[in-house]
Length: 301
Figure 1 (spheres, rainbow, N blue to C red):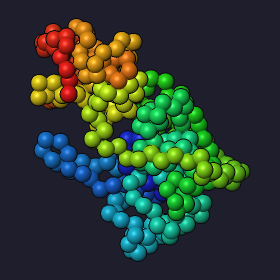
Figure 2 (figure 1 turned 180 degrees about the horizontal axis):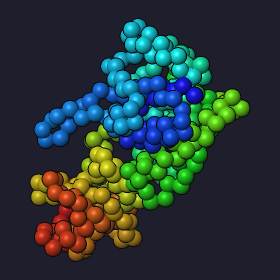
Figure 3 (figure 1 turned 90 degrees about the vertical axis):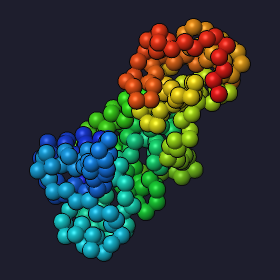
Figure 4 (figure 1 turned 180 degrees about the vertical axis):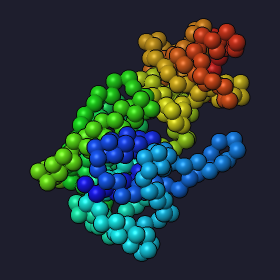
């Protein structure tokens, strides 16, 4: 098929690669413009741009698709289909309806659950046992289009980083398999009454509130790994928690209960396993405690 690919982060890269390997003609890769990053604040291309350039695919990064000229350039490609994966721009009606088969979106949830910007994080935070990928025919609403195909995977004790990587590969496989006979599929409308909304993650959510149950805080640690990272203050320093376990002991919330940095919560306790100090590499808590004393009874606020 003649395909326009639209995506930006690492999550989208496996699908772009898989479509190319399946011998589809990628007419262009639409992605967000390069951003300034790193200590030198140099311009860095998106992961999709980097992969598209490696594959010899034309890269386009308009700041908006609401512009008539940008829409005309899109339509001039005469695509059979557009594949969208975490692109980052709203697609106006002329773009949605331009390709012969419209635009298909690779969404990282089992729709209609977790429509919106942060489906993986919200699924972990909610304690969902299963998540997945939905391949959806795009419509005007927010992730409201008819569902074409789905694939499921258990959440288990995975972090957002781990689950994102897994879902990216599953999305690539699902997309390539679906395109083998797209016309034979029967899209299924979503039931709006079952919809839940996955609001964008705010950095303010990342500070650990030890009055919450430890079970919820352990999910927050996984949901906010790698970004923005759950953290607690200690002696004026932010200690980021990358991995933690729930321990069945109780105490006053925020109080250090033992020499393993077990911290009492609203119910049970949280024991960090991997932490990271600002500007330092990640380390095991045992190594951290050998260089930093945190006496039993210390209250973390």
